[in-house]
Length: 166
Length: 34
Image 1 (cartoon, helix red, strand yellow):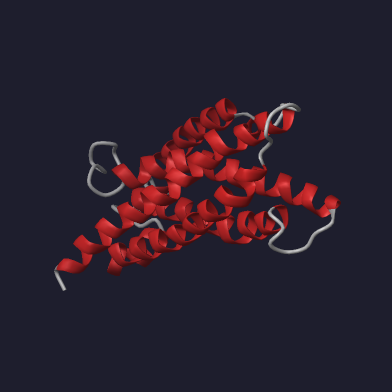
Image 2: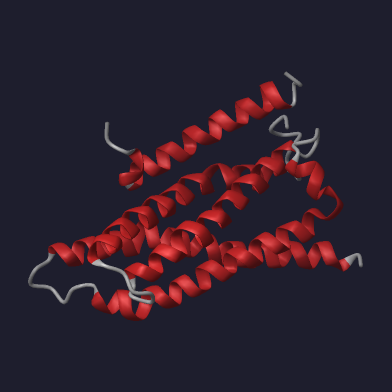
């Protein structure tokens, strides 16, 4: 039983790096690349990215988000409720946990259902695809923004809480 | 006003500002019991 927190922390980091790494890939690489491809009328276009890259990236993205959250919950263990209710000594990691939970919600409720429309996995009209593109984009950008405080509170919330006065 | 999330730089700056805001809210309100 003593090994569970160690394994949970390890898996939390592995899955978290996969999740946030892909989030940064989408925001810093893929979205600007697709915009550049669309603007380049003589270029090859972005169809290869949307057909072959994006579905695979989204598969790892959404499931690594789930594994990250579950491993984080296992790592909190008995501290789960005190952390989420921001009790003294656990408020820092609790804020990180809340931000991560909001980000997981965004992945499964806003990003993935709308990406399915954009990529043609489910049928949608051009108007619906346009709306889906904007919602997925803003949810993804929101998660990128939230990842900055999330990582601050995750990285410092437990082991360095005295250092930052939490 | 333009949405800061429409640009990568605006997104990153918003993230750092949110970090500061949350830090001071937790430290000075939640943990202070206000």
